[in-house]
Image (cartoon, rainbow, N blue to C red; front, side):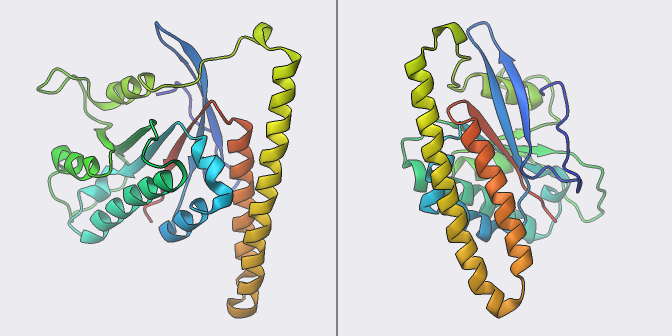
Length: 251
């Protein structure tokens, strides 16, 4: 969709990486920072992003995209259906917790095709998943669809792009229009957000220290905290002009 692929981390994952999208339409142009995340533990993710310290990060998000493997949606096992429902509900809960019911961003669930093959499958029905998504305010998009539907609307990646273009993104600022006072205000706000970030990290480290005495998994928790700090820093850095695309692992 953006014309280029994101660069993975050294461990081969996309968690915590950002990808730039220079979006230009007939009405505006802007640079959207796409924040990618891979989440395996839904409960842990929801708990962390519902913390008071994470509120400003969530409020800075202009859109959420949950990418899911269509192969898994076609499998007959109920575990994939339950997981799908749980994830989109968790995203909605995080948004509502931080922004209330007045948030005006965009929420999309996009089914993509992987190279995974399975014999335990059933016919894929976009209509079925669309109904499930509507309950939580998500629009479901089959990335493989082409052309238009029976209502004359675009489908597939064309619809994805159309939906994102219609969102209310912050337009690219004109550097000549920025005065020193505005720049000073931005610096102060950045410092405040950095302080809040350190508060969040400290609270998580405190919880981690408690777990060290019980399950011996302190090192693993420390890595998670460091990853969260990286994600938070990136979100703060692009606050006010941001789209966050969440890609959840289905393993």
